[in-house]
Length: 73
Image 1 (cartoon, rainbow, N blue to C red):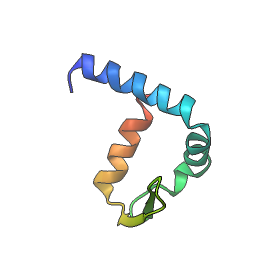
Image 2: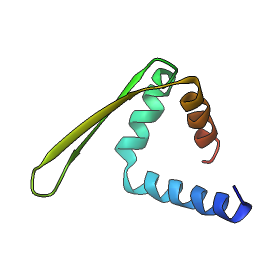
Image 3: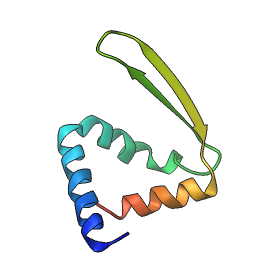
Image 4: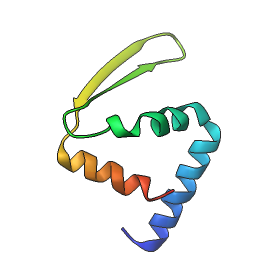
């Protein structure tokens, strides 16, 4: 990743944290659970009320990616 893109990502992550403090707090309180074998579930509800859900089991590569993103703060 080029340095400019890294700076842009860092700024976007900071803005996300300001706009969604409960999400950031949730991950801070539960970060130890984001490890290989854990299942992450994502639910989206559209403004019209339609919902979709998916999940994924974290791999060692996912855990490494999460650790890299933690360092972007």
